[in-house]
Amino acid sequence: MAPIELFQRVAATVPAYAAFLREHGVDPASIRSAEDFATLPFTTKDNYTRRHPLNDLCRDGVLAGMIAVSSGSTGEPSFWARTADDEKVIADRFAQVMDGFGRRPTLAVVCFSLGTWVGGLFTLACIRHLQERGYPITVVAPGNNPAEIARVVPQLAPLAEQTVLFGYPPFVKDVVDTLDLPWAAYNIKIVTAGEVFSEEWRTLVAERAGIADPVRSFASLYGTADAGVLGNETPLSIEIRRQLAARPEKARELFGADRLPTLVQYDPAVRYFEESGGTLLFSGDNGIPLIRYHIADEGGLIPHDEMLARIGFRPENTGPELPFVYVFGRSRFAVSFYGANVYAENISVGLEQPEVNRAVTGKFVLAAPEGADGLHVTVELSPGHDPSEDLAKEVALRIVTHLRRLNSEFTHYVPEAKQLPLITLRPYADPADFPPGVKHRYVR
Image 1 (cartoon, rainbow, N blue to C red):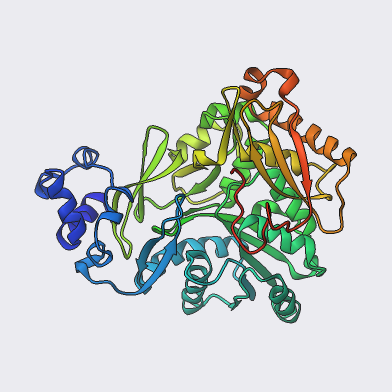
Image 2 (tube, helix red, strand yellow):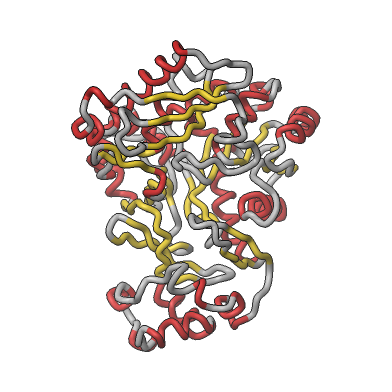
C-alpha cells in the first residue's frame, strides 16, 4: 500500500491518529504527495501510543486479535495488538527466508521466549501460516528452555531433511555449544532476531553446528513488537555483509560508522522506511497502524542498485530487487571512553577469535567508569572453564586488537596506555551478570 493511501486510511479510521493530527493542526485532505507526507509530524511512544487508550490506537477504535507486551528501554510495558491478517503479511518475510533454505521437509524449532513477549508466539503463528500455504514444515515450540530443546530435537530432527532453529543469537549459540547433540546430522539452519552480531559469530556458530554454507543457512530478522518483522537477511545481504566485515574501511565509507550494522532487505509496499538524522522511521499497517513512527533505531537506507554499485565487487548470490535497510540498534548499547563511542559489537569480535572462543560464551558486560584505567569488560566463561590470569590477558589482547581495527575513534582518542581493557571472568550463568532465561544486557 502506498504511504499516502495508508495515511488517508489511518487518519479516517484510527481515533488516536485523528486526534494526533488535530493536535498538530494537520488537515488530512492536505496530504496528497510524497512531499506532503514528509511534512507529517513523527509519532513516538511518548507523543502518541502512550497518550491514548489502546483501543483508540486500533482500526475503528476496536481492540481485537492478540496482544504482545514489550518493556522497552525504560522498563515501562508497551502493549501492541495484531490480528491474524497482520500475521499473514509478516509471514511473507518468513516465506522469503524459508524459500532461501529450500522447500523440503523441515522441523522448525521455536527457541524464542514464549509468553506475552512478541518473539516466540509471533514466530509460531507465522510458521503456522506457512503451513497453510503448503510449506512442508513441522513446528515445535520448546521456547528458551534448553532441557526441553534437548528432549524434542533428537526425536524429531531425524524425521525431517533440515532443522531450523529460531532464537535470540546468544541463546542459539548457547544451545549449540552446550547441548551434546549431533548438530551436523540435522542439516541445521538458523534464524535470529533481536541483536546485531558479527560475521565472526556467524562463522563460529556455523562451524560448531556443522553448517557448511553460512550465507545460505542463516537469516537475521529485523523485527519489533511494534510492527512485527520489518525486513530480513537474504543470501545477497549476507554475502555483502561478510565481504564488508573483512574490509572495515569500505564498510565505514558505506555506513558512516566504525561498527558493522545488521543489513537486511525490505518490501517498501508493506513497510515504508524513511531516514532522519541517522535514525529510522517507518509507516505500516498493523493491529496498531503507525505513520512515520520514530522507532529510535540508528541506521539508514540504500536502494538496491545503489548498493550493488557501491560495494566494489560483484556478488555471487542474487536476491530480490528490494532496497536495503541497515540497523545499528540504539546508542544505549555503547559507552563513551575518552570521547570515543565504544559499541558492544566492537567487543564481540574479540571474544569470537579462535584463541579464546572455546573458553568464553561471547556474552559480556561493558562499562567505562569515571577515571578508569581501561574499559571494564566482564566476560562469561563457557561451562567447565575456570578463570585464570592467562585467559584474562588473552581475552584483553583479542578485544583490544580488534577494537583498534574496527573503531578508529577508540584508536585515536584513547591514550595508548589505557586501551587494554580490564577483564573480569565470571562463571557460566552467573546470576549477577549473566542470569539465564532473560534477554542479556551488554551495557549497564
